[in-house]
Length: 477
Image (tube, rainbow, N blue to C red):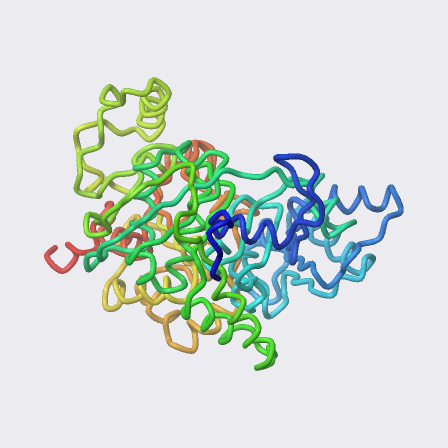
């Protein structure tokens, strides 16, 4: 898009918001049209109940997708049965609400295309460049990888979107993170985003929409970009965006079956306008050299409390910010770790490969490549949960399931499960887990459980050795 000298240069974020603004309410608030909303059984029941109490219909039923993913069990059995009564009620309620309000896109426990919502939406080509997509889940930032503005909302907002297809939206500030250079061999998108979080802090993007740019971002495959945007919310971001390019368009074309050539051409032409103009103002700018990124893991109880696997855990007293200092003290106490020693060699009892962060087919391929011909260490329980049933079938067609099983991993079905310790997938007190998930909060995977966020490759290498392991060192061990 070109603009004359009297036009103010716009950020990508501003362009998307402007294109979706139905009405400006005040200087900081707009009524925002939302292209797509997806809901799970966990955060939507009260919103549907609110519609029922007021006798209000769903305004645009085909703009909503509902999936059972948070409370679903992951055991490799057919059919899947939800044994927990409260969880079963949630799943049945969501299905009943979809029938009542004419929402056809419902993915229940035994639907062949069931999956974690943030995996399912993209793999079906339902997210397109320039869209506004929302969900009652904070990791909706994932979809910014496709040049869409995605963000999480609360229950009252879900009710509003169901009733009006719009949202009363407070405008965010902006932040640009430029990442140039080349990721070294053995470093992944997960390692990159953990490096970003360490640099920016858990409050570094608070209230801002982050736009990623730079040669390293352009070089990332789409699934790596999804991981990058997924975890950006852990810096406090209200959104994450990457300007759509040919990779994004190719992804949509490959996954949006039924999209006509005419519609695709129109989308591609629009996508070319979706970039920040030269000279556009950002409230904060950060630069990072991808060449400095090495395999990472978290040592504390916040995703920004991360370090290279072979790097000494920092001393809490080294933090000048008093909030960060106290958080470091508490994090190390909870994790039972001491500063000054590296995370490498820390014994683990569990490995989990799954979640909306790292459970797509490329993640499973990467982990399987590490595991092939190897076995899980004695005393370690290892689980892999594909991000969707489609991913699971694709992995099985490639023989990845056999590699996981032969290595000693449990081959499970898709769901959020151990990412947030739901429906039976819960770690015991003190169990230390190398996990490909997005949050390592206190009690996140079970009361007293100790979570360390890693890439799929690091998770696989750690499963084999029984300790946190840099996957690049595995051949030498």
